[in-house]
Image 1 (spheres, one colour):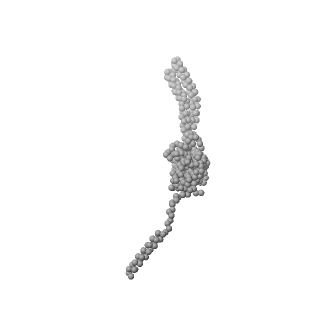
Image 2 (tube, one colour):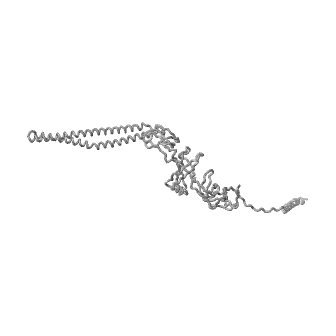
Image 3 (tube, helix red, strand yellow):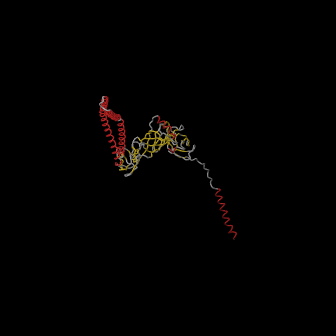
Length: 407
């Protein structure tokens, strides 16, 4: 009885194994599935070679070559500040005033010196006129003294006068001659004295002009329509001569300094040498600004050459220091093809669809066409009108990869 209990599980196990083996041996055989090559579904654009003008995107900063810095004309205090930084101002508007009491005494002192010298010149003229009149009188007195000496000498020879009387007459004539010579010297020295006084008067008038100019410049007046860039002082500040008070720039004289890449430097210089107009555009606040390349920097570096673009029309949203993206219009190119940025690989390769597979094509990137969104302009002898170029950027794109354009 115990042996039967032990054999029963073994029999069940053997039957189960046999049944599993029988089922496995009689199962249907599935046919082998051949692997299929994956087809990548991509977007594609049709190549249409045309004559188009590529744009060169530049990044620059707004500056003003006519930025004006008003400086203190002398030592003094700030009386009143009438503007603030960033404020728009009009030509002739008073921006700042220094205390006039620091400049008026110098003006009055200079005026006094001028008046004193003008009076001295008038006095010299009167003196000279008197000297000319006196010299004639002195000459007559000398003639009288000489005649008296001659008469006394004859009388002495006749025994009527003593030698002492003759000597006195001769002494009188000598003194009169000295007086005449002094008067003649005064007349001859008149031109030198007058020139000296006139030179001092010129210096005094120059000092007066400087004092009056300093007084006028103590009121800073806007020389043009523009914007206040910075206010350097406050009311009551003590300032020194030459210290900057306020700086401003004209709204009509703004420029954008942008770096022209080295690969395009020769092209830009050639255009300027031929006096060609180089226009550019920029977007600010939803509006399109128009600019013109007016000159380039005198020195370049390894990154390229600085170009200066002048705004054709002032715009309130453009201020000194603003950053702008410029699109410079270049010369038209024949055979240019418009492609999206996603079509470019490695900066010089695109893929065209040919017989259901990708084929790498080397291209020359001409630049951007502009617009929203911006597109590329490329050129290649291997691309013809009607060719389909892949516009989807595949990380695994290689020549021979199966692809199908999405319709």
